[in-house]
Image (cartoon, rainbow, N blue to C red; front, side, top):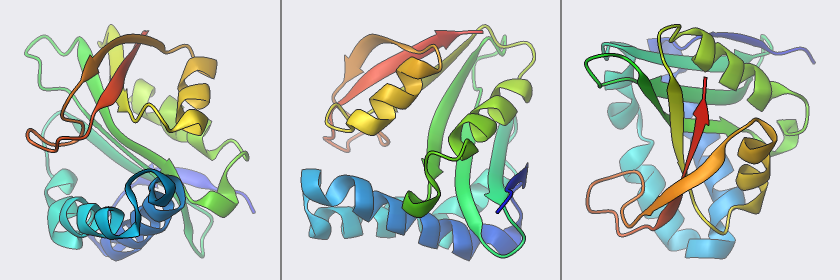
Amino acid sequence: MTFFVRTASRSDLQAISDLLGETWHDTYDGIYGPAKVAEITASWHSVTALEPRLTRPESEFVVADDGTRLGGVAFAASSDPEKKLVVLHQLYVRPQCQRQGIGRDLLDEIVDAFPDAARIRIEVEAANEKAIRFYETHGFAEVGRTANCGAEDSGIPALVYEKTL
């Protein structure tokens, strides 16, 4: 199937939530355990948690859609006043859709949406080797670490990667 990247809409939110749940369980069950992953996805990836992204200023919320299902999702935002730093909060591709260029297409769309940005940043779980390979292949390099990936008090450590645009 051919996937097209488009702006996410309110009617996509349940499918996005389902995609994130499936992808997170596939990626993180072996790292955090299924119960912790279910807890995180219920909090971070519920329709209610995703909805504010539709109207957040200085952001881009996109999906890869083949007309029958979503193959991937990405969300990024810039909160720096000069719009030079973009934070890629999510880029996930459904497990059975990986290695088809969907991640690359989503990343390209995010970068194109912020023409004045000088850098793009992502936090990556150190044990997520597939994601690290993806980002390194696309020009990202490790620039630091955080003790709280994804939320202020998450307690989830991560590597911080950046790419100069």
